[in-house]
Length: 383
Image 1: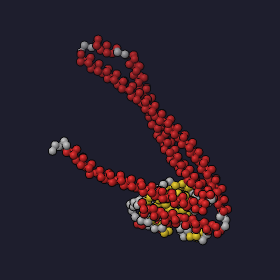
Image 2: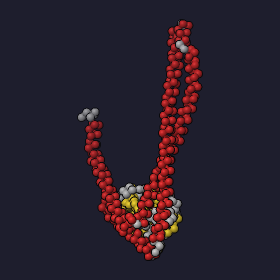
Image 3: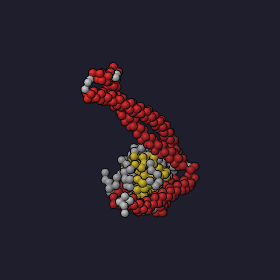
Image 4: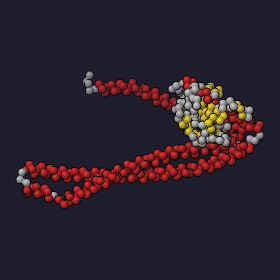
């Protein structure tokens, strides 16, 4: 067999071996996408059913849900705009810095070219004519002519370099103008969103006042707290079924191996502990009081299985870590991840807020194992 054709044949054989793998990967990716859609549909149906019960849409809680979600959307938008603005400003600074050496180079080149062009104008073609008339040695004439040709070529090269730098300067200035406009647009959009957010928070205060008035009776408050817990139990039970049906994949390291070594989800003060009683209802999570808007981070690698508003918990994110373990991050100001997304340990998934009818900003954090509440503090590093 000819050596020329061997590499080609080997390449074809390699592709034949690899193509089933590519096909399998593509099929697996398509299956995963379908599973995620199925999970998203299941969650949407669940939240819709919960919101429809007991005339929820027309109640004060329904109004609170609408406002909390609006505020969450605006807060997320502001976070995105801030990042975009920061990136645009950094780009503008870099472009302005790149413009300086081009300008300095052009100034230096202009000085040298001015002197050389003046000299060239004075002498014109006279040196070549003088050489031909005064020099008798042909070799000397040839060397001198080459010398003058090199000088002319050097001048031509310098002029071309000057023109190239002028083009670079023009491009840099155009990029600066474009980026400046992007910065202006981002600032305008940010200002508009901030104004809308302020109005939304003001509106929420009014709704919370009405809600508090509505819940003045202790028996009604107790009834609502129990109903809120039942809603969460229903959500978790349905999620367990959905997760088992779609089989979204495992973990790179078992959650159970990291007890007592997991990072805290937010830098804050523990103001309500696991198992504490309120209005006769046992609390199955913890509250970490923290500054509004502070980043909330996933404590471990996993997949988002719920990202929506839930009565009593506000904007709530639930992450499945595999092996029956789930973590919950509630009363958020904004949710930054959607159902089906993978998250890494210490990745920002939400921001601290007071959604769900809470008076102070903080994070509701809870941990479940096979649906049963566990004290999350036991799983986190000591501090």
